[in-house]
Image 1 (cartoon, rainbow, N blue to C red):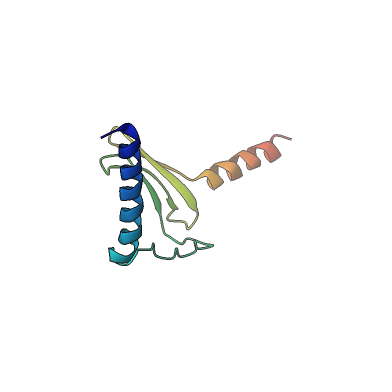
Image 2: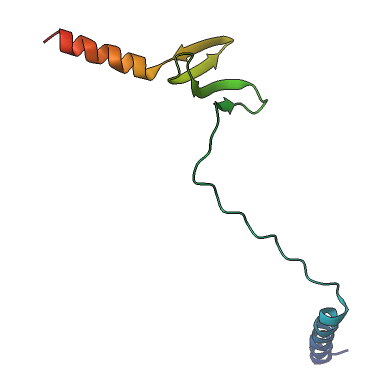
Length: 97
């Protein structure tokens, strides 16, 4: 078979296969519609986990009901209340004047 005959035969086979696959193939599958992203996410805590699922830190609410950050490193947990630290520094700056 010559190169020209091979080319014509391959084009004809591709065309025929494409036409028949349109009518013989099962119904096309379509992706589901995406739900829109929420405007707000509510939670009591947002945790930061490592690849093994161990909790490394969290953005949470302190016992006083304020924003707090917890960090865990080498088995020790540090609890920070950034608003308390800012208030304390503000009081120091006012008192020193």
